[in-house]
Length: 123
Image (cartoon, rainbow, N blue to C red):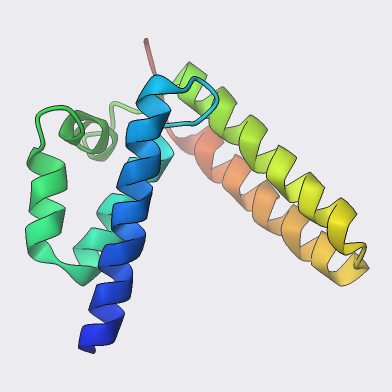
């Protein structure tokens, strides 16, 4: 993998970590999905950043709990799905393209299906 690709993955992972931290204070922004995405991006871009996130005192438990099969809290699922569908539906209205609408609905359906298969952890 090129240095540019690694840098992009690290930058995107860092953006996700920033959004996750913001989500810890704003109830409308989910924390767990952003941290899981960041962990995936860091895993491909930088072992050091990945270990930092997974071993972090406050952020690490979100990733470790998911990996251990302990799931995601119900509130996180509901907020995440709500915001995902609001964003997708807004995009469909703005673009007014049937092809894009079908693609976005397929993406949203897959995201909903995937999240429904993740165990729900008691809060």
